[in-house]
Image 1 (cartoon, rainbow, N blue to C red):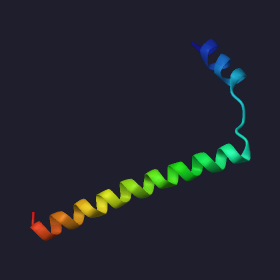
Image 2 (image 1 turned 180 degrees about the horizontal axis):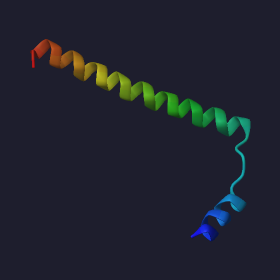
Image 3 (image 1 turned 135 degrees about the vertical axis):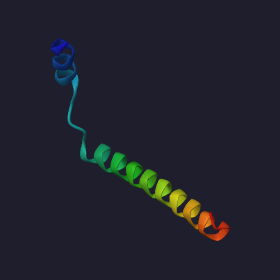
Image 4 (image 1 turned 120 degrees about the vertical axis):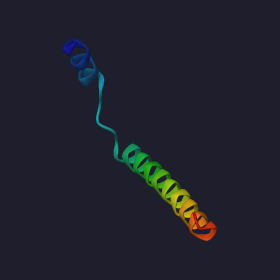
Length: 50
């Protein structure tokens, strides 16, 4: 079991700053979209009165 973890850690590498910025940007966009969807759903339920 630990051999698999060791193998993954050996082959893993640190992301470059460009890769990190791109992934952080995409995660931020995803969080904003999910938050906006939750807000819209909440507003719809408030208007409908459920």
